[in-house]
Length: 111
Image 1 (cartoon, one colour):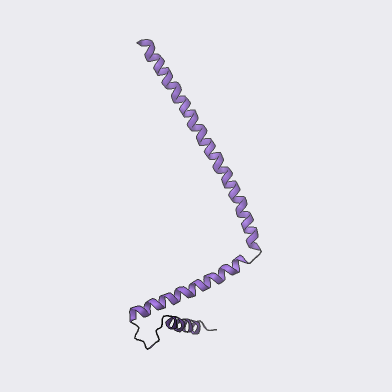
Image 2: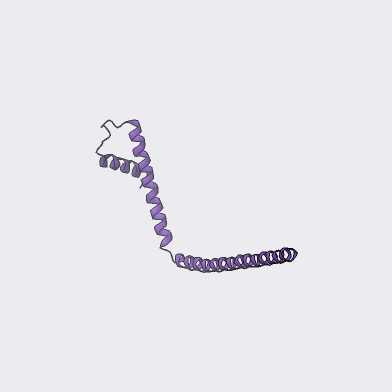
């Protein structure tokens, strides 16, 4: 089927859906909007067809399994990073606490 034929058939079907025929006095702006809707409709049909083709293949399961494995690895790395940061924050807090205690004791002994 010719792409131009499909486009013109769909265009006339949109005009029929809106209750407007080619001779009903559609303004240029309205015609432009209808044309854009038709292009959008055609793009959505192509996208739907492409997605259906991609999702029906056996490779989809292999890709999904690979992504699950990657997700688990990323989650593990994230957890380890959080633990490391938490450990550093705790160590820093303990060091700050020791400095405060030493400063308090030195100031208390002088007073």
